[in-house]
Structures are given as C-alpha cells and as structure tokens.
Length: 66
Image (cartoon, rainbow, N blue to C red; front, side, top):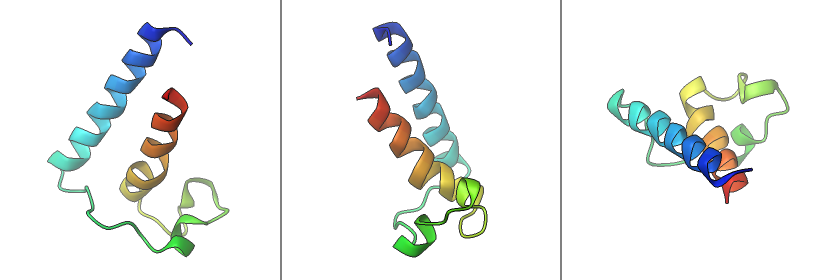
C-alpha cells in the first residue's frame, strides 16, 4: 500500500470519528466483551451501527494502516 493511500484512508477514518463525535454518538466506555464478540455481520444483533463503527471498524482499519 502506498504512503499516499495510507494517508488518505487515515484521513477518512478521522472524518468518521469526527462525525460520530459531532452527532454525539461517540461513547466513552466500550460495550461489554460479549457484545463485541458477536458472530453476526456488523454485530447488528448486539451493537448499534455507530458502536460498531467506533469499537470495531475504526480500530481494525487503523491497525491495518499501522
């Protein structure tokens, strides 16, 4: 992955975080571990979409970028 692409993706991840904060959907405390361990796509049976973004999507993509 090129550095330019890595930077561009990182910027978009930051845009998502900023928007979640603007919408007051950013949470200070993570959900219980069992809620994060769902086998259902996007954890839609245990998390709200905004929770999935904050606690699963953003950390995983940031880890990939590192």
